[in-house]
Image (cartoon, rainbow, N blue to C red; front, side):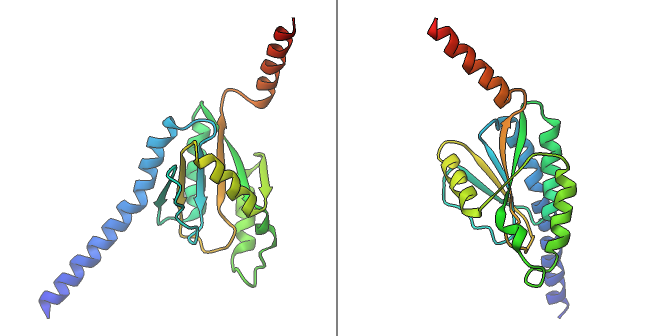
Length: 183
């Protein structure tokens, strides 16, 4: 009987330690990927039911962590970098998920507003975002951080953009090139 209790204690301790290490590994991987990533790479902070996708460019990491905590940390790391900035996307359907079917959804939506602040946000139907993601995964790497959140349509999609160049600067450059070619 004592031997069984010892074995159970060892297994429980191992699982607890593995769980702690496991949930910290995603941050290590994020820290490794961010310097490599640039515009057109994606980071997804997904809910628990988000499927493992088969595209070779999509790396799935199970964080074992709270989605909002992961989101805050990812955005802080992106904000601290100079080479990238986030383009945030949410599922359109999230606005219509009723609290009676998904307890906590109202608080979740409020938390997101606080986290996003005045950042630009694109809201699109889920299938439209998935199509964009599928197209991107054919050429660019995507890091999918799967969390323990169990509210539908709560995945946050972050398409990375250049941190030191924007659409306005690109348009100015293209206009200048067109002008010089026409001379």
